[in-house]
Image (cartoon, rainbow, N blue to C red; front, side):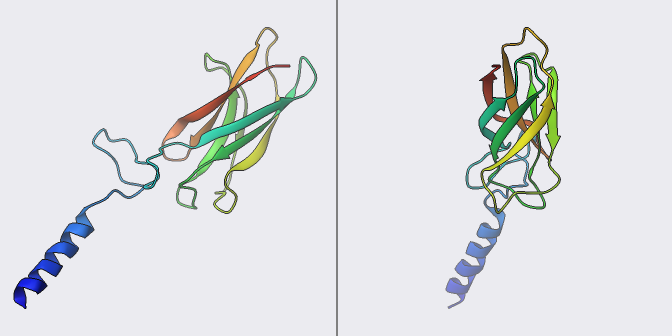
Length: 139
């Protein structure tokens, strides 16, 4: 009987030490993402631009964030050039846990003439900018 009890206690101890939580850091010091998917950043899954030639434009951004909770969520999205010049950004003040993926507009986006494409990306409140982006052509 004591051998069975020892095995149970040992098994519980190993279980408590194994596995990564979504907020644990890996060996590189980077925050781990969703425990289920390993994602570190929110992903932009769709972006559509509207407005007259010359702007200003509005960009509808659909983003998903599998670790979306009050403790960690996608807190911003932006429209930028391939070189990193930012033309528009929208801050998000709360998680969208009950609405995944979710769509929000970035309005009053001013894109300089001569720019033919922009990149749309998301921001995570712990890991920063990253994840899947969408490149859209300016009408």
